[in-house]
Image (cartoon, rainbow, N blue to C red):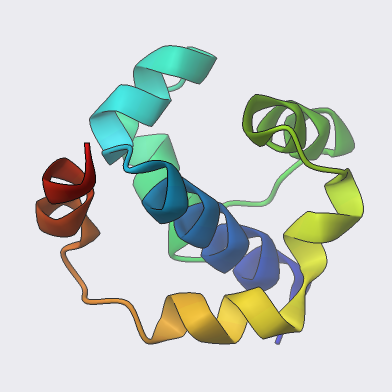
Length: 89
């Protein structure tokens, strides 16, 4: 997997674990919801500063966003995670 895809999938996994929707998370880190969607899809070229921001927002180390193990778990999540995130809150 490429780095952008790893970060996006790990962000999706961490967001799912917190029970946060894309909209809620976007508001939390002052991003547009479309940016969150692109990041999670692995289509957003991230800066080191953005990777640090994402890691910090979840309380993890930046290296955790490059975990292949959790990225593989995120790939198994349903396409519409929002439905399940709302159920967890």
